[in-house]
Every structure is written in C-alpha cells, then in structure tokens.
Length: 386
Image (cartoon, rainbow, N blue to C red; front, side, top):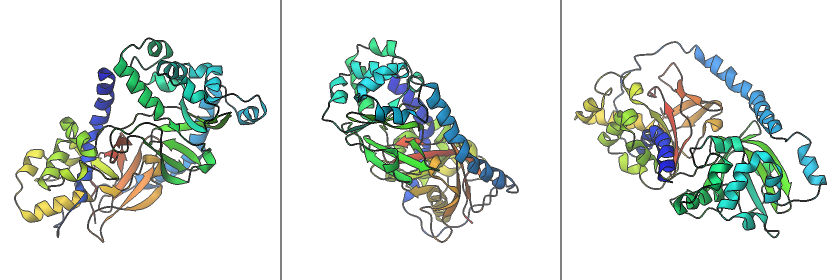
C-alpha cells in the first residue's frame, strides 16, 4: 500500500506546490504594481482557444459514447435494463467482463453483501477495467487484486471503493448543472476525503475533474450505476501540504507564500481553487520576483504587499475544476478590488486562464489536483492584474 500511495502522491505532489498558492488567500494592504509580463504577445490565441472550448460540447460526449459502446453499452442499454429481469449492482457488474477488476475488488474487500443488499438504495460510480489499468500494481487488474494479502492494501482498497458509493439513488439528471458535491459512504479520515465533486457542463458529467461518466443510469434492483473511466482517489493532503512537498517545481511559489506570510492559511480547512505558477512561470518575471533567493531577500514592505496581492490574484473561493471554467468566464479572485478578476476557458483535461494584464492565456496543465481543502490548477505564467 505504501508503494501505491507514494506513487499517487508523487503525481499529486508534483502539482502540490500549486496548492500553496491558495495560501495567498488572506491579507494584502495597499500594493505597488509588479512589472508587466515581459513575455507579453498579442492575444491572438483567444479566439482559437474559445472555439476549441466550444467544440468540446460535441466531441466530449461523442468520445464518451464510443468508450461506452466498447464495453457493451449503447443508447438502448438503459431501456434493456428497465425491461429485463432486475439484477442487483453486483450481479450487473459480474455479467459484464469489463468490470472484472471492480468485481475482484468488491470480493477482496468483503463488500459483496453490502452492494447486493436488496433493501439498499445506492448509487455506484463503477470504474471499468481500463480505469483500474491506470493504477499501479497491485490495484491495476483483477488477477493482481485477487492476489492482495496485505491488510493495509485491502483496507486502502476498501476505502477507495466506498468513495465510489452514495447512500441514495441519484440519477444523472438529478445532478445539478455546474458545480456540486455530495458525500460518499466512505468513513471520514481527513476533512473532505469522503466528498466527491461534480462538474456538469454541456450536460456532460465529470467527477473530481478527472473521471468521466461515460454511461449513466443503469438501473439495478438496489440502486443506480454510473460507469466511469477513471478510478476516484480521495485526497489526503491539504493544498499547502501538497505544495511544500514539491520544491523542484514550486520552490519559488513556496518562497513567495512564506514571504507574504500566507502559507498557514491553506494548511487547514477551506475550499479554494489555486492557479499555481511553476518555477518556470515565476522565472519570466523581473527581479526580485523571479527566484526563490531573490524573493527571500525582499525587505521592502511595498514589494511584499504587491507580492501578496499577486498571490491572492491566483486564488478563487470554492472548487473550480477545468470542466467548470466556462468560456471567457470572469471569476473574482481574493485579490484587492477592483482589479481582482481573471478570465477562464474550460478544457477537457486542462483549460486556460488569463490575468487582465496578461495578453496571452496560460495553459492549465496538469489540471484538477485534488486536496482536502481545494483544487490546484498548475499554470505556466504568473497572472497579473491590470
């Protein structure tokens, strides 16, 4: 289990420093303006990015439908389940070979009875074999899962499975448009580690920003199944914890947060979106804002205040995953008004964001790094207010 967790955290931590930007969230006095972005170019990419985003309304559902057909679900499948003999959730999973990894996990963790309970009214977000295959061993296929003997690995796997289950029946049309969340039946460990987050745009649903509902509303005798293409992994670290863990990519961001006395803000509870610039993003700025050493050496109160406001300009209240970002959506940040809005454009696995003094959009990649107190969007430019 330790190996698995470390691998997943390595991925998350690489994005983690990003979370620290969230620490930006408190406190700025009157600021002096930072120098303008030295890499400014005409915003010729705006129309192209916007058009690409609009095209996702057709392309994303089409790709999801293709994935669903590959595992035996078509437009008529929902009707077939309605008319055919009623099977419980486990029986439906057993009947489809593309859920063999899920079935092996349910058996290994002793959850067969709970998911077969005729009195239950559950919703299960069911990962396919291809979803499990994206995980490291021993969680990546039915054979490896069946061979697990470590109690710690079994306990971890059980928590992951419970993180896919709701205690009530929820059909896809009952999930609100836009952003929403719900509590799973996973026992609480850290804050919000039993909550999943929905992004519903163009009628298409993503869970925790990363997993697509590729086929919805499979009716079982004891609930509803929604098929997903990625296993949901619950968060274990705060934004600050993730950020501090990756000095290779976010040492400048961490130094900036420390200089502005903002790190502690995102070590506890909260609900933020942090657009987190990498070291390469900060390196594009003029001194003294371009390196960790230069930032550590700043003593001018006006410069520190300006830096704090810039950091707050990267933080938004609430969780905004890439699929939530809209097309030319104006979002209010925690920076000082009136120059406190950024412009965002949604993406399927990434997205784009621009400060009012930036002429080029910053690409979000990687996107949707989940923390217990928010979500990190890693960006390749520092956002600058007007």
